[in-house]
Length: 261
Image (cartoon, rainbow, N blue to C red):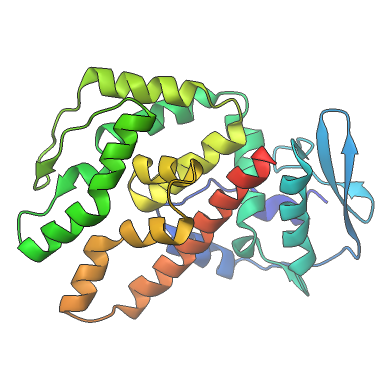
């Protein structure tokens, strides 16, 4: 079992999905060795069994998740593997391993990283030109600023261009208070993944709070990229990378929902 799951012994490199795909494609994928996938409730959570044997993380920790819904997501990933086990097609498994082996014991690291993202959130920085793009950003991003002030109590500054703009300390503190209420390392890890994939913690928060759905979130996170495509042409390689990241994003959103179920 340990040898089979060694493929998951990698950091969650959400910033470079193509590298992750490349690494996976160069590995000799392990054959599917199990017939039955099941879940079982036990003290402390829910386990996933392959032929009645519990699975472990790469660090040899027992995979015990907090809800049946999350266990079902992971079980489904194992079920859809056919002749081989392909980690590139198991984003939930990679997220869960990241949580159990790297986050559950020290949520502070992810907490602080999210605060750093908030301080320079993508939607704070607006195009100076062309005017049409600037207008589109206002139309699709400004409501998130209003929502953050209402929901979190944080009022943020915006700027034209890419020069860093300082955010009010009280706003960063408000986000800190908001994040401190999150007790689940699974939710915190998912928010971090969503933030790194979109460049916006506020977009991630809005999805988690069901202010916007995941497809809308993904769309408004790519306003600049879509504008460039409209002016020039589609970069097929870039679109493949974007599609891969979307799968990762969807998995993170699904994990938040399942962790709350």
